[in-house]
Amino acid sequence: MKEQIIGILDDIGEGMFDGSTNFIEDGLIDSYQMVELVEVFEDCFNIEISGRDIIPDNFVSVESIEAMLSKYVED
Amino acid sequence: MENKFSKAYILGSGELPYMVAQICREYTENITVIEIKLSDGSFLEKKCSSESIDYMALSKDEITSLLLAEADESLIISASSTYLVPKCIIEKSNFFIINWHNALLPAHKGRNAECWAIFEGDSLSGITWHMLSGDVDGGDILLQKKIPITESTTALSLFKEQTEAGRDTFKEMAHNLFKKDIKTFPQGVATKNQMHYSKDVPNNGILNLNWDYDKTSCFLRSMDYGALKLMGSPKVIIDGETYKFRKYELILNYEEYIAQAKSDNLIDIALDSSGFIGTDYLLIKGSKAILLKRLKREE
Picture 1 (cartoon, rainbow over the protein chains, first blue to last red):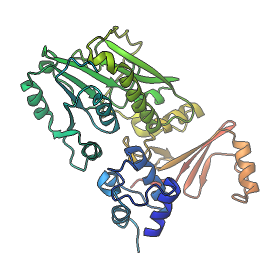
Picture 2: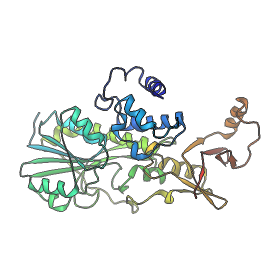
Picture 3: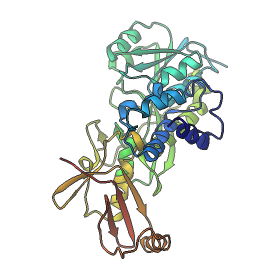
Picture 4: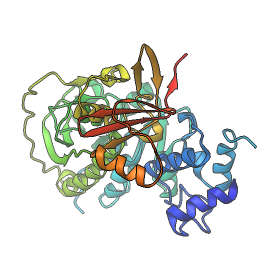
């Protein structure tokens, strides 16, 4: 899953996310982009993400995104 | 930069308070951003922290107490805030209070104005910076900016445009605002009662199959906050069963759409009437159509 997340971020950010330790504080993801990303993840993994999970803490890094998505994606 | 205020308080949530705080920094370093306390993490808190802007998360009562105790000459900017500033704060003579509302006042006062402007088929939306009068979204106007609503405008895309217009217009008026050299003009009289409450949802969230294409499109786009689903997922009643659906596609030329789908081998049957296609539902409206995607029957 991690590779897919990195692939999606690469497609969207064209390498912008490389080297960032906090996507939110580094200004790489704003609240609108967070919503757009959720839609991309929903389509990619065929899941429906709860509004309760659309919070900045779940979008600070590839690891936090992966942790959030793993609740929805079956192994 | 000339500044007649000792402090600036910015009340709100989301992107706009942060954008406004950044502009205020050109005039004063004494800025506090206040957000109604949220149970989950706050986007605004993280943005403010990254820029070393003072940030507080308070309950509505705590905000009132804090402002009541403030004795300094202060500029209070309410930007995308659900805190209704009480009269005891508005009446304080050391405060100059302005509010951003995401509609062309006096139209669409209250909550979720972006949604209602689209649902009601308005061709224009916009934003208004205004003084506070004590009535919800009442008070004389400082500045307005129009934003066209097109056939592809959704509630989310309009709110984003309104936020950006809020930032641009605040920047435009900031110089005079901090000088307290601002001209205002009264709100006109609304042509119809347009006060919207947070409990209100367009047509209770139900798509009426008898609507024409334009009304159906307005409904779907007004409910469309992307993954946020602020208004919940729209529903449709087919043969007595209620279905929720997650996505939709507006098809402006159905004939071309079908021809393309056939040439791409996506379909091999003639679709000349509305009906289910797997878990999707096709609604044909004259030469146009709407595809409701991934319907799920409600238990």
